[in-house]
Figure 1: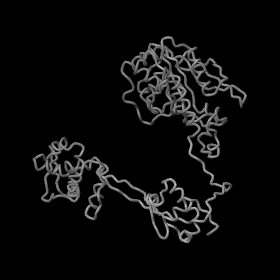
Figure 2: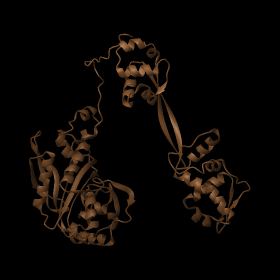
Figure 3: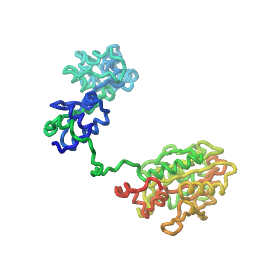
Length: 476
């Protein structure tokens, strides 16, 4: 035992626990004058050396919830039901408005207590009282707390007489709530009790700084989450405001409002996830529906089916959130972006997922033009660390002109596609009452993250490879 080296914190804890003390952490703090984190640290050291034993127990405390205090004040629902029947209100039709949301509970518990009988006839359902409807144990328990002030810190004292009532009332939502407290009691092991106090007072407090320590992996956010947060911060600092929307959308906002024809390949089951058997009851205002349908009929020259527009889908892009926001708010000037998950019914590969994240934004203004849009994109890429970019003409159903952003991947030594962008077509904006030019762009966040972290396979972000997750640099 003399060869064992103890820290001063350990010495004080051992002193407080000898010869046969069983103490809580707070009691050890008072006896030793140590801080709580020092006591916890010292106990862990002694546990590892097999000198201290920790026994945990759970202490449960009961308190009244909102419904419990309400019952103390006004009585249980079944007692209020009995009182109303005694007043002559005996039919369901009369009692429902009086008892409100408590009606069903009142019937159920009164029936369980055998306080009432129910008779049904052609015109109504009648209630009558049985002879025995004396005070229940739950009522007696509540009445004993009549003077208790409404305060969640008021603890209910548990006794043999009250235990049945507490258990019974706890089955009712928000009548009685419980909170548990874990209590740790510390004592010395057989080996710990053998430690000589005299040896402790003369032992060295030296620490071997070359001894090995346990390998600890601290908690950290996922690299993809870091990328999402960085993109969000960039657009906020550029003066944009974030908007959010549901991941489920009607086909009207996901496709029709964006001038995507109803026979477009993107709207087939092979490319889009539809919610089976679910249709939206209200998709837009009658005026919006009429003008969008007229735009489709005039420009695409086909019969536009409102039932097709009602079909619910997992959104294939976040543009549906943005266009709905613009249609509802009729903004003359705006800088907004939407960031979230989107879904495509595609075959999973090294560059495609069925569920991924997308950043999408718009700028609204009377003088907004394509040069402004390219400038915003250049600034965004610069702030995220991408300097070699170029813009390539392309086609999108709802923008004209349309451009594809190309960025140079130094590691692969080639140009790769990233964001799509353009100006919303008049066929998109006019039917929805949007009169100013709208610059729009969007793209997958995983692709940016792949560039930042030097990955060739997008699936790496979701493989839960702990060695990579722990080794990925926090700052790129």
